[in-house]
Image (cartoon, rainbow, N blue to C red; front, side, top):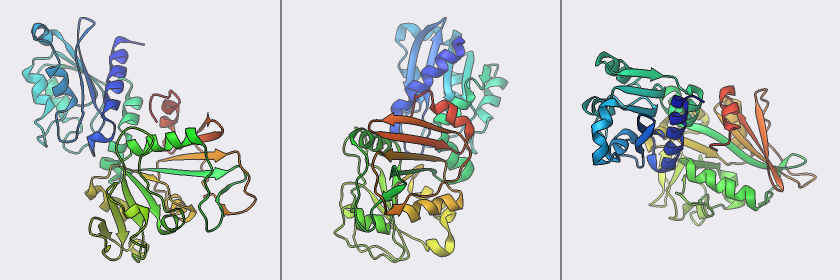
Length: 356
């Protein structure tokens, strides 16, 4: 591993500390190095707050500031170029007279897309781009989907029995064990939103909250075209923000409604509109028909399939996911987890197990 790769990997580690507190922004970490000594580190900690580069510079001790003009700053994502909720980090790097910048990947945001790299080079700064680029893009895959696909990153998640059923007909059917439950709630803490359909809300009456892992609750999205769900269901409590996708406004005051005719306007349009609610990623935990709708439309990026060592004999069949790409399986005793990425590059990176 080269020194540049070593410090970019440290950026990845720092970036992940942001978890879902960064909202629609990407995970970003920054490391400032002078003669093989780290003199500053930072990460983007909160949506609307200081970026990773700002926090890294702020962490430099007063006695080390004289070394900044001879230092390298490592960032997993190209520094921002435009004024948003914070000033451009590109300007900050120039003010601090950093002589070398190492970046993992170019920012896909239309206001950046290489502009900072061009400007830094024009000002005489040495800029190296593409260090561990595939891993860098994997880390910000949700942000890439938001700005290149114009929709949230979609993760399909379901549990099935060994003989291929996701549950008994018309009744809630728990399948997986305690370790799998911890993983699922960890995923809920990372993703912006969680989505189910009307039938799952009625039959399972889930809370869809994160109760066994540290972190936030996801935004709950419920597909109920005619707005017929009972207000007494758990998904309408005040524990988490809830958005109903329906043709008419929901009667519960604290529940938001995306008034949208899913059948006539389609799934892609709904996903595009959900970005207006600050949703960067969605964990789809619905029943067979909801999951199959995403599969048929080709509107998914990742699938996480849990298989329990249970035989139901009959019931609701698991969704049919015909995909010839890479698959990876790990054991969450007594269950198995299979992970599938539509982007084959992501599969090999995920196997390194530095982020789920």
